[in-house]
Image 1 (cartoon, protein in one colour):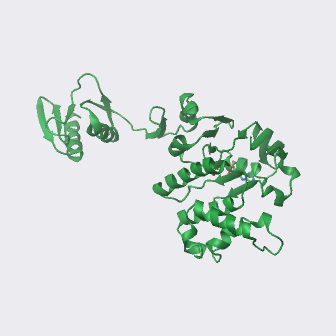
Image 2 (image 1 turned 45 degrees about the vertical axis):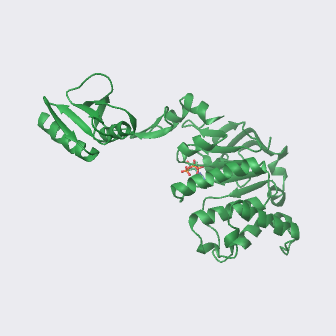
Image 3 (image 1 turned 45 degrees about the horizontal axis):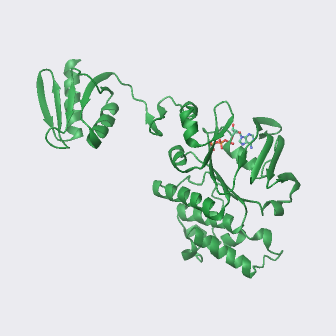
Length: 332
Ligand SMILES: Nc1ncnc2c1ncn2[C@@H]1O[C@H](COP(=O)(O)OP(=O)(O)OP(=O)(O)O)[C@@H](O)[C@H]1O
C-alpha cells in the first residue's frame, strides 16, 4: 500500500467538505478521481499531498503520517503536477525537469551523476529528450504537460498526483497522456492518482476509480462496478445529458416528439438513428409506424421512406432529414 487515509476529513478553515475518508492507493495502479465541478477533487488532491492541512484524520504515505515529514522529505514521497500554467517561461526543458531533483541536491543545486541520469531517464520516459534545450515557453500545451510529468518523474517518488492533466489538450493528446500514465504506473510500479473530467476515457483506462458523488461521498472501486451500480449515471445526470450505462458514453437528451420505425442494420443504421434522434424522432425498432425508414435497400448508402402511401428513395442522411421535415410539416 502506498497511500492510505484514516478517517480523513477535508475542507477549508476547519469546515468539513468531505468527511471520514478511508481510501488507499496501491503501487502499479492508475487511479482516476472523478466528480462534478466544485465537488472537492482539487481539495482532496491538495490535502493528500500536504498542500492543504486536513480538517481531521490522517494521510499516511508508506506508513508515515505526512504531517510528521518536512517539506523536503515529503518531496521524496509525492510528485505533484498541478493544472495551472504557472511554469516560468525562461527555463529550458532540462532546467525544469532538473527542478524535480531539488529534494536530493545540495543547497547550491549541484547535479550529481545520478541526478543527471534520473533527469535523462525521466525525459526519455515521456519522450521530451529531443527538445531538452528548448525554452518551456516555446512548447505546445501537450509537450509542456509532458515536461511537467518528467519533472515529477525525476523526483523519483512512489506516488504521483496530477490535477486535471488532460485539461487544454486535444483528444489525441488526452488519450496519449492517459495511456502514458497507465504504462508508467505499470513500468515504474508507482501509484498514480489523477483527477479528470474525461469520464469515458477514465472508464476505459483506470485500474481503479474514486468517484465523489453529489452528496459528497467518495466511492472507490473498479469503473465497471461503479457503472453497473448506476453511480456514474446518478452522479453525472444533467438536464440535457445522460450517462448511458450500456455504452459508457454521454448521450444528449433530445425532446423526442415524433415517431418513426427504422428497419435495417449495421453502421448506416447506427448513424441514421443518431441523426433521427437529433431531429426529435423517437425510434421504434419493432413494429411499423406511419413513417417507416428502410436502410440499404440497394446499397449501404440508400434509404427508403414509406409514408402517406408513397415511397421516396434517398442517397444521404441529409436528404433523408429534408424529406422527413417536409413529411412532418404536411402532417401537422
Ligand atoms: N481556498 C478555498 N477556500 C474556501 N473554499 C474553497 C477554496 N477552494 C475551493 N473551495 C470550495 O471547495 C469546494 C470544492 O472545490 P474544488 O476546487 O476542490 O472542486 P473540484 O471538484 O476540483 O472542482 P472542478 O472540477 O471545478 O475543478 C467548492 O465549493 C469551492 O468553492
